[in-house]
Length: 119
Image 1 (cartoon, rainbow, N blue to C red):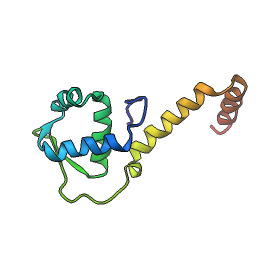
Image 2 (spheres, rainbow, N blue to C red):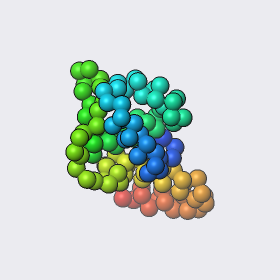
Image 3 (tube, rainbow, N blue to C red):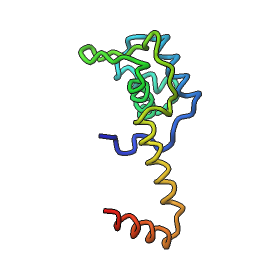
Image 4 (cartoon, rainbow, N blue to C red):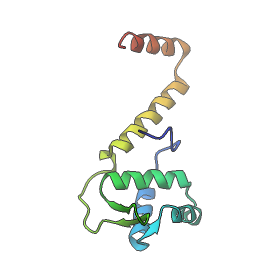
């Protein structure tokens, strides 16, 4: 199940790089340790959790459930962040939400009518 809007804006590439470098340079921190890391880096904790979930899905990090520790995979498969299904789903949700904010009432009613007929 996908979290209901864990973030309001997708992080940029530099933020993903910054967090990954932090993981590499500070191995075996727990998920709760990243609350402090968020404060230290000036990043929203939910954003860090989003990035960690993307990294985990792409097999760039390992999460030891028993000890709740996160560490970087030494030789991860080269993939794009946008290959993550979680990233794609949240991106689509945010795009749709932005579209709804700017959509005229007539367009919204047409959209609802069109999509109700597909059910």
